[in-house]
Length: 458
Ligand SMILES: [Zn+2]
Image (cartoon, rainbow, N blue to C red; front, side):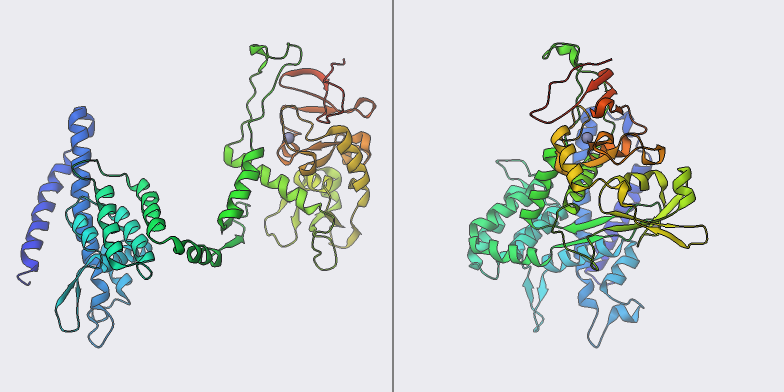
């Protein structure tokens, strides 16, 4: 033990012994509110001091590895990250983060052995004083390092001073919450380095990506990605514009009557509604005439299912390229929409037929149905016609024809839910009628602007 290490180790051992007993005896519910407020704040400050020591120690790991005298390799560690992760029990990601921040804040040592000081002296000082948390310190060091190659060092250090005062608080104002520090740092960075925006955008553009799959064991396909600002914002706008709560009104009451809203729950979560809107967008995009061809045909997915399963209406099939089986119910809904081709096989997997074109509505049938329905026929739904599937009101298996008198527009979400949800559909004389929440009787439904107003029949 060196004279530098011994007092610190004593302090840590002492604090651990005291705190170990106190924390074990703490019953938060027995604190008065003022004690709770004070302790919450003070324990956080103590935590920041402990964090400062953690980051400083981790940050020295790189200095102890590599070169002819690799102290960490001698102890059996593969790298600085391996040593910190193993000794602390942290995940690699967090170990890396600590090493990186510590490396930036710790004082350096020059080749001659003289201390060179921290690259961010004011941030380092606030972290060791326990007034600046490591999350905020990471944001600030990253922001300043991003501009330092292009900006006068005097300006950078002025920005560091101002940002530390904002984030850690001063006599004049309280500290900034860590989640607000990033925005403030960004404002400073843009003010002192206006030319930096373009390179940052270029760097961001290089990192753009979008991945699909692999499928999970419970039969879902994850998507991950980083979208450029303009694409992400466009996608968000497009989805937000259509992810609305579906509202229902009772047509028997006068318009504007406060009692006309009928309790009905659209029990989808916002995330589920965003998924369903994306499904509508994909369905619309796959119907575009000049969509790119794949292997000589329009972009279709192939579903394989036995004739018996299709005839009996239960069983499973498989989508080409996806391992998880799919139910006949879902297959029938896919067959309703365009771009789905079925390969029908007998139980010995001999191909009986390829495709089943009469089950798909043609584009001219679709145009006619669009003119009549104008959009998803479920009252209150705002999905535009171009995004909808055409649904067989009488199922094809039940003898329903692929005829305009038997097809209505439904958005993906309502199409999935039509057999088990609250809505029923019927087509007297080829005119779509719905029955459901707020529409206890069969009610004519259309979204077409030129169509007749809602009237009741039956
Ligand atoms: Zn709908």
